[in-house]
Image (tube, rainbow, N blue to C red):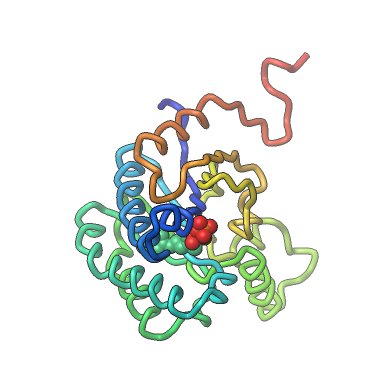
Length: 235
Ligand code: FPP
């Protein structure tokens, strides 16, 4: 565990399939999925990871049947209300990334209260991508830059970073996706330019602390070159 890992992103996929194979309604998969979020946050604290980002709800997910959307929003709300004291006592800062204008007021209120209450927590930043899509984040960032009349010659990667929802946050070193799909699905598409990926067949409700730790160990064995040559390969 010697190599420092600052930021892990997680695409939690497979809740619906987990429920389906058990003959349960899809929301049972989401309910169990929330328990897994808790388990992985504890693991991230133990492994001294600085930032963990969960892809909880994409902009595309608003198009799911209203009943499923309502249940996910309720789970999210209840989770935040229930966990807030744990977050504070364990030093977990909660932050949302995503498009706030699409979120119903009552849900946004709970999200922003949790952000305020944990603003000074320093052990772990737990980011939740809610009503999020990477392209939407980039478009919102460009709009903010245009509104500030930034001169084109002065616009560079740092400027872009400063307008993203993830401003000031290190890029993800590792992105984990469960359930066997091997794509980003609009998650942190700007920030993942040099991320490593870990894909597993495990459905999110079956993902464990052990497998998370295995993914981190697997990452630590890899050699990241960021487009340069390895030190050993230099002549
Ligand atoms: C992907 O599985 C999961 C989601 C779209 C929702 C994830 C949401 C939660 C775990 C609850 C949110 C709350 C918190 C606290 C993060 P899927 O439904 O796409 O599964 P499938 O591909 O098998 O249908």
